[in-house]
Length: 148
Image (tube, rainbow, N blue to C red; front, side, top):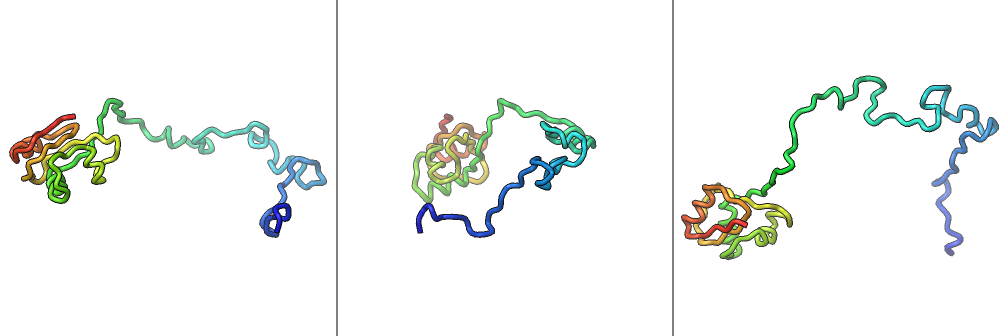
């Protein structure tokens, strides 16, 4: 077998229809486009969302709401999860880097610690935001809170 002898399997390819090359080809005349109308003309393209003259969906459905461009999206983590991490890994400092290592957050996530559950370990917690109950619970366990 040589590179110049390679060819597709028989029946796997077929020649392209040559449209608009005269009556003898079988595809002359209207060139498979039918008679008259916009679709038969060159340069035809229908509008995005066109539904044949019916009122399109994007015009039937009312507009509502808005997107706040200043919104900060936090990844929330409860203090019982922090307690579990301390017991499992023996950490004395919990930071976003540790949480990323544990697979709880992604690289650019902002972290907010929430107060669900309980924490008994003395631990320094570094995060972007804390709920009041979480902050109180961490400090009640002789831990410290650092806002980034």
